[in-house]
Amino acid sequence: MPVLASFICGLIFGAGLLISGMTDPQKVLGFLDLFGAWDATLAFVMAGAVAVAATGFAIARRRTAPAFSARFVWPDRNDIDASLVGGAVLFGIGWGLAGICPGPALVNLAGLSLPIVVFVIAMLAGMIGNGLWRGRAAAPRAIETSPLPSRADG
Image (tube, rainbow, N blue to C red; front, side, top):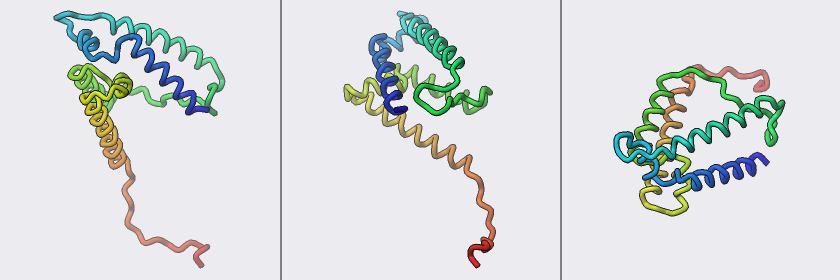
């Protein structure tokens, strides 16, 4: 059931991106063009999304359990570290250059546009690379010792 709920939420999110025009890179780049032909549409879309999300979180916080899962999984960190800032900077640079971010890119992938396909491949490569880098950085160092036989070994 959680997979179906996630799928339905993804469809609703994708439909919202399509309806709001946020899958159009030119619309996003127009928002970022503060000193040219600025398009404020994205600001209204973001304000609407924040209002809906805030309402949803307020309702969820009052519940004792989620509808489609055994328990809530809330973030346990709220600090701002170098990794968060670096990721935000990279995201912003990519968003500004391409006019597209991961959600709209996945929606646009249905059109099989070569630039979008390349963007999604690069995005996936970055995610995999980050996972490998973080996994290597977080992996505990093995201590070189000879294994001691357990009592079950005789």
